[in-house]
Image (cartoon, rainbow, N blue to C red; front, side, top):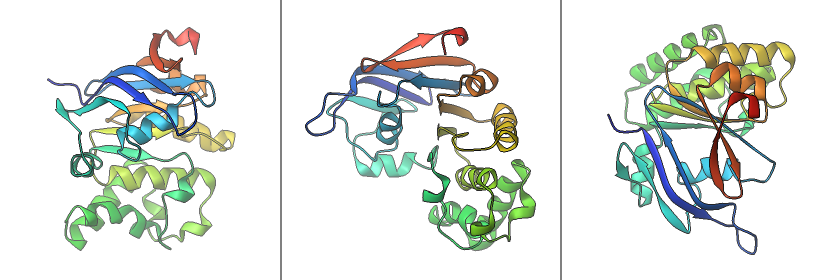
Length: 222
């Protein structure tokens, strides 16, 4: 079976700045949970944005299921399968009620209103937050907001999640809940985090981004 995601020779630099990716290679297999760490500014979030087609590499190729993602149409087709969960959930939720945020993705994929609602409810139940469906988003706690953001991606039935600092700014109780859920989710993932305990608890393989390239490391090196 082909890798879900493969990166070959990826290069990227912001205008007037040193490159953050210099011939970077990476692969994500089906069912694999990959922990990605690195110093601040090393390019971890930039990498997720490249995979999602929100930035354009200077060189290199991103493959989804063995097919290169070469243009916006390619990325538009791959985004529902490579679900990107932003670091700040407030940037991902924009409807008044939770159910509308979680159903938005399936609706955009052409599913009927009733099917989109069913997909949304299933995603919420998967995360143990079905009771939040009709709640106002502005009344959510930080941990609830993060879970709803993850549900808004899961409702599209992705093959992999791209998670950017999923426990950032959460209290201990919310963090523990997120860690437990991510460890059990039956979906491949790339988890970007400085939280070594989170990565050890949820991931099966670990990479460090340094000097513009990914280096495989053991869990003790996080």
